[in-house]
Image 1 (cartoon, rainbow, N blue to C red):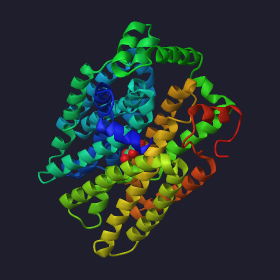
Image 2 (cartoon, rainbow, N blue to C red):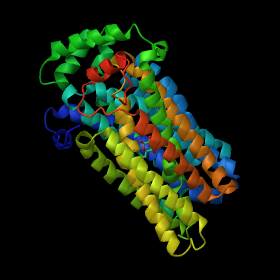
Image 3 (spheres, rainbow, N blue to C red):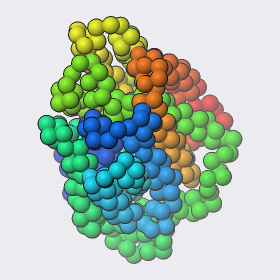
Image 4 (spheres, helix red, strand yellow):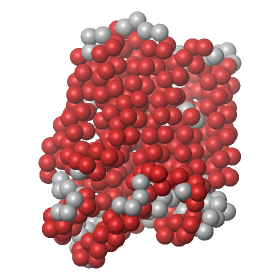
Length: 459
Ligand code: BGC
């Protein structure tokens, strides 16, 4: 996406309606971020309300990720069967029910059930939000709007940190978790004003309605776009998940799955979900830890904006290499600092700064570039199923990390856990260098041609 495109998107040039609709749809990203980030602060106080083992702690945090993996696994099919709009409405309702259940949970099992329910909504949102936006957006700004989704995810995380801070003094974890009901209601009301995706309407034989939506969201070229939709619908109907296994697609599948897993096993969500807990162990109090976490969330948003502005100029590969390289370095520092004595003194400050730098390096590389690349490297005919598969892998790896983090820090210590993430990052660096292609400035067709000619994507 060019800087000019971001400016246009942010300024709201062109057809206002499509921006309003996309902004409402991007609430899916906001909820994804909010509902994943909120646990970080709530968790400190939940620990005071219930007696729990490290495993149960991990289950409370990662319950949402298990739900999200399940939600993402069925989300694509549901979006096809019920329509994008209806699935967004269902996601909003499920978000509401999940948040409500957590807020009133009298016991740990009910809390876990609430996290699972909430997670299913997060999984739906992570699939249907970007899908809806990419189908409703005019082609010229599609890339820009796709990246804005990641910006909304980080904004949602930051918002959740503010809410955590607001309720931290009172230790009101039920209010923190219940706050997710507010954006859910906004999304539910908003969706009633949003039109169905023209692409979905067309696929379901509702050509006139598809034409009407395109007329509202495009300044021209409606008939030509309808022809193009027809062409894609015809190619797509011949393919399915089985076609993903075709040998010529293997390099793209390796890249997508590899990045999905490395995005998570390098430890970002150990920080995003457990930052206050980690910071507390450096000698900061409950409230100060949550405040420092707000700093981490702010840096995450700011660096995501920087990445969006750079990605079309310096390219995906370079951002990834610098980003993952920086993660290796900061994790090595964290591993060392947590190993040395004196954490509650000067070393605690180094630890806090290193955590912030670690998040910055994630936010200019693996964070946004993963989601962008997986929307670019798959041929249109298999894009839906490929992105679905890769998204499920991403949530699965997220589940693994958020479930095992408390167990690992309890068992082998925080220092060794950071070293482990550091080693995974090093492997990720090698992976990016060896396999990830540069897609900057290339058409999706050219990328697909290379695949068909059996050229390794990284050559
Ligand atoms: C990842 C999330 C993560 C977020 C942090 C996203 O790209 O998929 O797992 O929590 O970035 O900003």
